[in-house]
Image (cartoon, rainbow over all chains, first blue to last red; front, side, top):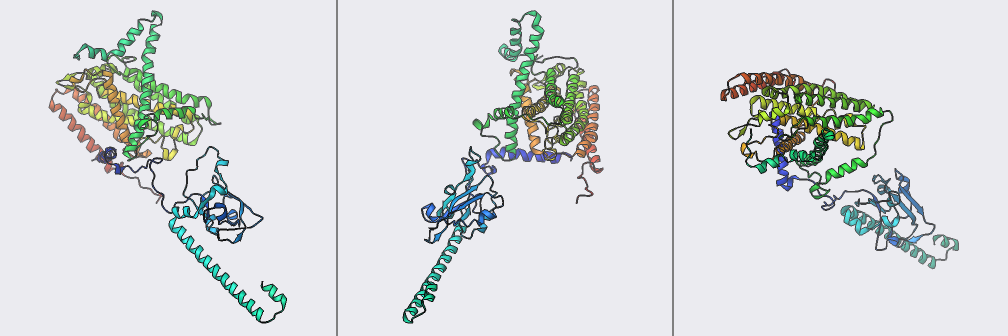
Length: 207
Length: 398
């Protein structure tokens, strides 16, 4: 009969109305500031800089290669490269950024900076409560504010961070092996040089 | 006449009327007409906007619950102060008038809408002896004033000089003109039964009791059909879902008031709800016995309370329907008005006339009810067969 569907619809909405007072399961709303649900692992919003160890300045992985700055589509990364070098977390001499600023009011969370970084130094964060009274300075993050420890990275993206750590360890092991091999080769060469007199200019080149 | 159980109840019922007379005693004779008008009008200007504020909260809460959400619950306890926050927000917002708009008409449209909506309350009997103007042609006055709303809406749509505004206004005019006819015809049966156009007389005719049951027109077959048809037409008149094509948020954003902001927008909102309350009040007056109590043993409750309880019930019904039905299409809307509403209201008038001449009794009641039911079934079946209520075939969009 005509109008039957309307009555059925009215019954359905009435059931919703009263049901929402009876069963809490119907209400899908999360009352945000008081209630929170943990973000899923793939959550990402703004980039941050990873450091190893405990000292953020000492352990910063970034070597100021400026690839991310060049690749950033909205151009929200500002990097100044240092003149001098200092040892990084592994102890290797590297350049470092004297300035590393990200304007998160411009950032579009595309993750391209993360994709292009050859040093696994920049990763995506999950923190989003950045509201501020100062819309220019308050949203321009400097390198101190951007620096977060590797432990933090493990906490927010455990799978990804473990993969990165494994890759870095492998690279480090390879580099060590190579260094060891190079050292052995050099030692062998030195031993050979000590045994057989060689033309001086060649030994200078090897060193 | 109603017999009061106690004089205390009578005093509670007439407290506003007595207060007015008491205050009038202190006013010099020369200014008494003016003072009387002010004392009658000011409470209406205060009470109905207050009900509007409560209704906005009720609506948002109700719609939320219908959609399994909480609704506003942040401002004050359980979100009760939300209307105040909304009001403050709309007061402090910038009032933007488009450069190419007709400034004066643009300004006048919301004012006219609110004034027209308020004028309709002049003839609504809110309680016993509580009516601003007991006109002998009160019902006629009500519908005449209701037509002013259309002028205000078209002023808004035209003066904004925006495509969406004009589209919305055209839709509104087409819809309101189409539904004005069934609205008046549906209300006419109450006038026929009473033999008077005075709203006060119509309510008094219904405020009588057989046993414990009142003589409300809604309990007669033609009264029930008239009430349902009146409420459908009233929903269309007040541009509410499922007849909210003039606003059509997903199609033409806000229709005729798209170019309004700040307080003028709030005025439109206010005018719309006031119009809704006024037509609901008219439905209460015509079919639900106005201020009269639903049972004779409940007459000790002040009459104005009954009016507002009924108004609240109808408002909740409006919210319920809004939370249930999707928006109609323009052609469905017009088909519904001219091919269903109009024949049904005309048939209903015929039944009401027959009722007047048939001998009273249970046979008359069931005879009229069966006649209306058969007419309804045949009409809707005929329309269905002719494909008027079927989904439209799209020739090009597939």
